[in-house]
Length: 121
Image (tube, rainbow, N blue to C red):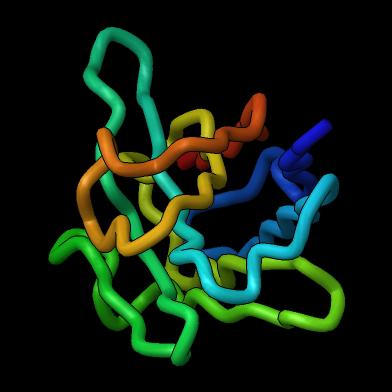
């Protein structure tokens, strides 16, 4: 049974930092893209960042320069380091895994339940 479990969310002041983790289990994901998406209240889920099997990284323009995605294949884990957080970063953050998925949400087959990130002023 494949599972993706996120952790690390919480409440942080604007300008602060958080590090999200997502542990995948059930099979190896070493050849998959792994990514983070987020969904704010009343808004559609949107792409945040992705990392390929060869460690190429991709970011949404809104987080470029502030967020860093990384992965540890041995631990089947993907991370999202979030710095200089803004109020508009408040959302539920979901990790996802998929083969050759890139930025395309529909290409991701496996999803976690999400972790809440709330940025306060």
